[in-house]
Length: 495
Image 1 (cartoon, rainbow, N blue to C red):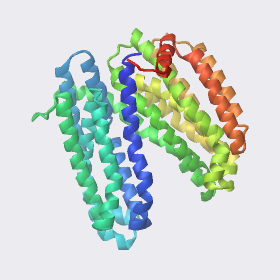
Image 2: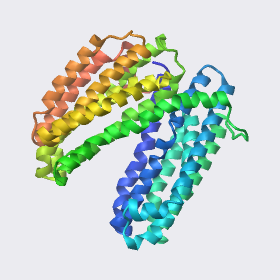
Image 3: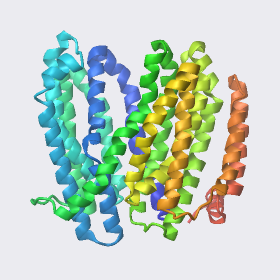
Image 4: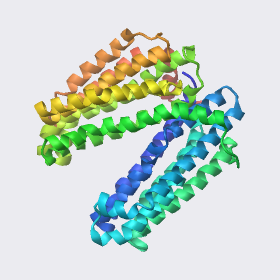
């Protein structure tokens, strides 16, 4: 596989960059809620969401920047790589400034009307939103700097910065609320300071790790055209993909009692955390894939091995979710949610596995400079999914919603794989190669539906994982990979 050792190292750093702040968040959020109260905490979570999803307004330039810079670097064309990086950073900064100028004057209306903030919190929420608006240019520019580092495959430095900023983003508000003030504007002022510090840290790392420094020049026309040609289609997917992912919960809330929504939303949220692994793998794979010629032996090999890697790493995780769905939910949330939530989790888990497998070919399609196919697929899916979601939810409640979501994931994965075959690997892989892994997966997942208590679940989990390990060793790993694993497991000193 192209850059196997580097890919594994980059993936490990990406996983650490996402998990470390998450662990700190789990530990600190209860304390933050006690300090500031639910109303203020709700506003703070909104701030985190807006900062996290500000890149949806980048017109796809952030992702396009990674692809173009990585592709030019792969062809040893550093001047064009630097021109693409400069153009992307300038446009992202301009988009951030426009967002800030739009949000800041509207802060009073947003707080008082759109967000329905309690009257007693309005005097601190309005300046807090103005401060948030001031942070957006830094957020957008940092997105570009992180893209430059990704294109240069400097994932260690990138994720070290991400870990520090992520931990500070969760732990900082607790310290401010405990020792300075619980006011929203005080907490968001810290967010602004962290964004400025983050931009400075990324700029320093870019200069040190990638040899990039800011230029006092307007971006070139060719580099701008290249970025926007890719970014426009990526922007369509950036808007539609989250919409497709949240439609199930939004529509469900209008068709069933509100308390029933938790039976669906809770298993979905828990399962979604498992996507940290495939997203980390694909973030590391994207710059590697951007320099490959379509139809080349390397592109063909990368498509097949990305699917194999995703299946080997994700199936055991999904299998455990299926096996422990009933006793896990029963012990965590009680028998009422477990009764209906367990089959919902099991159905969603199948869809999550298919969605994870689709990440490989989807990444290769974008890396090949063909994001329009993903955007057109999402456009075509939207009305069909809405109709299927409504029909199955009306007929079968939350189970129907879960089934509709998983069916969409299955169709989505099949179409994406077909597109990758046609546009990237040029039809060199065959569907029958998936028959063995698919058969093993179906048999083990069906077995995972049987247990109802902890003892049965532990027994089925151990037997199923052992069976999968035997199959993966004999049927999925190559001879050289088995040899390396034997060397790692063999006792004694290693070279």
